[in-house]
Length: 470
Image (cartoon, rainbow, N blue to C red; front, side):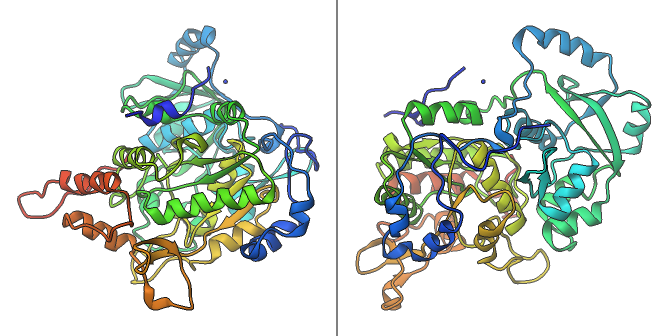
């Protein structure tokens, strides 16, 4: 059987503001996306039907995709230069952020944030460029250092960033060091300082008291050598693939969980709706998150195996689907973080973004309740500064229809016919090697999920060990 790697071809790579009109990208009138989102269930509005659809991909934020990887002929020189500089050792999460920055997911950022960018992100969820234009940026992309690092840097204007084996990863130039106000950062990112926030515990609470920003030179492309690098397409590579497929619209769907048939229904229905609007070849970007996730999420390797089975079983059409890994770490910061997820997909060429219930949400770390209002994510996306060019597609509610023995959009006129299978329930069934109702998930995909939980061998005390975060 064909693997997912055969579904696409890999190709070998202060910012200008965006013009208000785009010659290569069809953008719905600014007052249309809100009405379209609320009215489209009954069919496309006349305004949309009357607009001529034009081919082309949406421009990156800032007008140009930022790529920070050193050209091949210069890499040995940069490695030697790195050896002469003060060094900062990167954590796994730090390296994931270097990856994100190096490929332009955070365009127009050119490196770890300096203080002015950090403050704009915390207080405005956006960055104002030199010409006065605004791009969205809702989560800080920063590098923490401790007092020892700061003293070691001294008066140097550049530092080398190295991995845990002291191999040079990047050089950070024209550096700026400023105070790491951890409580403010946590409060403004999550809306709480309650202990137990997974990302905060991993990357903030025990981090250094200083942040260092500057311009990045990444010595070579970030690779993980885990068998999944072929799926980690950069924004430039994705844009090349969408162009090769003659896509006139790209709609992105992010997951950090296995794909069930309700997800597939949402994705296939979105394509149908875009075709009805007049697009000729809308392409789906199925884009699972591949950076840090909390320990009870299914590991990336297994999620990718499950996605592969979904495609091989024909639940999604390989001809109109591109599967790739989004390298960002996960914050679980709800409406704040979902803006980052949407903004990054603009840089990859997506002009439509599917948003679900409680995107990037999690339970409160201390209380038995959700940390965020389940509807606030999609509401925030429709109003967020710098995301005006992106068309937001809220989920329709899908559930298991007992009369059809399959996933269907919920019909409130006959609620007794529907069964809602939560992620918790799905995981419990898989752990107990029980089958879900026929039509909930393709058999091959379900087997992968069962095998995953079976692989978590109970320890001697009977507890299942937590997976190690990616």
